[in-house]
Image 1 (cartoon, helix red, strand yellow):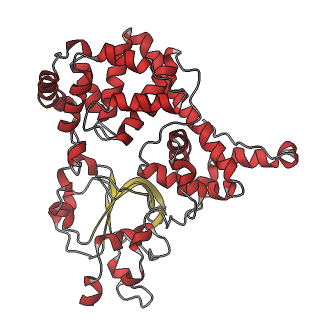
Image 2 (cartoon, rainbow, N blue to C red; image 1 turned 60 degrees about the vertical axis):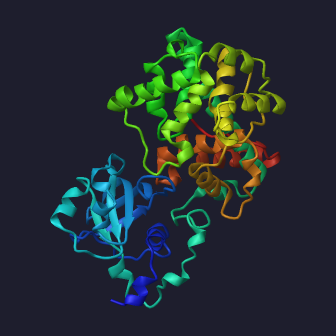
Length: 419
């Protein structure tokens, strides 16, 4: 073992090796000796939870395919040391990838999820003269370097940025249309549009990880039962959150920034909704979401619930307010421009896949409708065919469109995603 070599390595180096096929060594095996082929290393997760999501591995001579998450550590003992053994967020981990080989104790193996394998990268790379951690540009990951798995969408849309942006526009409209249909159905089932709005907004306050418990909280204390004073509403919601909701739907608190903590978000929701929901709906109903001015007015109304940031309010605008207005018939279609929300890791990755590594994020980051389009394509196309991109209906339809005589004579300005 070369101590200086290992000292130069960090866990992020090992993550880059796993993610990048140009760095990842051949001949991977489990600690039990079974061959491992990486069909897809997974999506690099920049949030709490396993390091890589939705990886696809083929194990053994029969190439048994498994799908799930991957966790990367320097040492095998880090699995227990970092508290993953008892964390349900790691229940879907199918591979524990480490730099050092062990020792992996019996207790350590038993603490891994049932179908999880262990892979050691260090033994394959430590003695290779062409490998040096100093040559790995950590700043390039995960967006500037993508897995070598073929991504035909980039090739399909590289010829025309206009085609790609039109694709995102249409996909964004479809995502909002789907939300609109769901809300319209809830109007019929619940018979209380204010309660539907309250539940959807509460779910938005929960962000991705706590959307479910926030929705459950809104159902536990309906808007009509909220005390009229914000302080009292905060107390009622907080008590219900930890004494009732937590027993049914666990709250996610690990690695959450203070401003995004459930307690802070509950306080913001209480400030916005307590004794004011009918008036809030009336004020929002006067905003013309088809215009930029109307959207900005709606965002400022939402931001009375401090510390609600501008980007979070913009996400609520796109995901709740606009579909709600469409479901009520106050807005005939999705606006061509929507105030942009913050780009999350999924939207960034999709942009790199479709537009390429060297694209300008300003193409889509200034329009929330295009961001919605990135999210829609990921959900309806990428997750459905992962990792076999050659089967993607989006690319097949685009290829068929390009091959048509009409396309040859007059190139279209759009290419609709399927689904």
